[in-house]
Length: 310
Image 1 (spheres, rainbow, N blue to C red):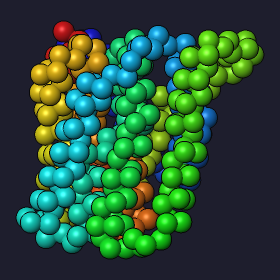
Image 2: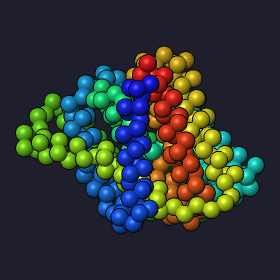
Image 3: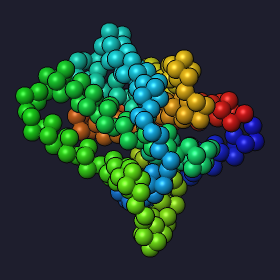
């Protein structure tokens, strides 16, 4: 248990530190936004590129691993989509927001620092694969639910073209793509550039965790917790259980299985609130879901790490 605490306490403690400094007025919304921009545009891409460029890649696409993670993700999205309409009274368009809240994990801000602390560089490759594919697969699904199923702007192709362009220029996706190319081409990064990447990448996990804490402090929460708790149960409990069960049935190797299950147990991603704000849909419920699922993830991640590190 001491080994688990050595991983979990610094990670979630850093989130709490960012939260506390924001609540104390030392950091504000602008501080969190600046940290997030630095982390998203420089620090995390530098670490991802550096790690993937030198990683030992599998000879074939790990379809079983992707299936173990994404089939449950799609299933949970569909379940939240249906339950939000049939039991919670959400509208057609709002149901897409429920689906994303229940299945889109906070892999970059929280999952990456946690995996790095727990397994070091040997856990990077399976994590990189999920980081490269989560937005690519789930953003279009959420967009379909919000735009087509919700009958909003369904006939405007330029909207989808712009969305595809934003996804293609996402710094995380670009860094992973470039790292893959350098790896496959067996290119050598010049020493000066490699040192710059190392310096930038070293700041990534810490900045991500502080930025998450500052972001959480911006949400002002009131009553009406029923809907958020339903989504949290799907995100933090049902999703990792399904991934664990399917991954075990498919015979996923232990480290990759641990990565998939831990990432499935991560809280609802900050991007869900960005979607909610952009579409002006259930922002209060999504904010509550992010906060509660982050708190829940501290318990779930601790239990899972105790199982996988043992």
